[in-house]
Image 1 (cartoon, rainbow, N blue to C red):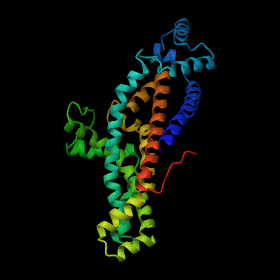
Image 2: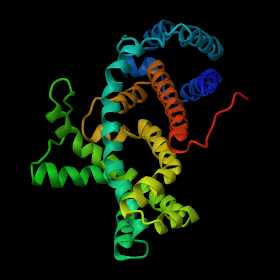
Image 3: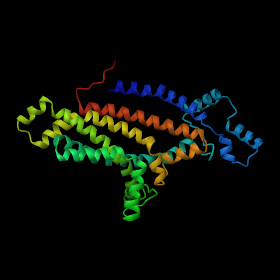
Length: 316
């Protein structure tokens, strides 16, 4: 396992370098001038030229990328072209907010999806199965921005149960943190719940049809033991795979929801950076998201060995 972890961590280096190079080139092909975005429409050509010189935008792209990569290898993601704050400090301030939202969203989706998928598989081709699949289909079909607006209208404006906007950190108040994040977390989590429910049902149906399940049942095991101890654990491999993928997708998918609920997370920072052509911040955000996504896939691979002891990671 140790050698496997070392190899996977070393594999991060070329992946992140490739991601950084691709992102750098794509960002610099975005139409617009960062100097003009900063100075406004009233700036003259001389002022724009001075600002481009100050930003280092007059250098060839290869030189710009080489300088950025050299700083990156020293742990320096650069500074914002708009605020002069370091990219690391901007991301460090916003990333915990987004991770808080994503963890809450995934918790909601797992608590909904796995029980629903298990019930659907155990009660296959019954009204409970059909009802579960209808709920899952609704979750998959509803766009998160529409779900967000619907939740605001019902639970914030009409019922007044939850605040419509804003964010309160856990350190300030756990209760207020939960209240402020419940609606955005549901708008994200309900969609993920639909996907995970279908995967849970499919995986459980496959396991429940295995010969060893019939043997366990013939030995008189209780329904609870049969389903949760024997069937669900062996059905978890594809389920945790889709959970890991969805967690990674949510890192880049909170942009719309954070904007709707006025949550100052990575999503809003990305929008502001794109609008202002703030290249270093955009590059830093995408690089951090890519790194987190890779670590999540590594964590999922480690979880495989817990749910299926037959999986071994060799030195080769």
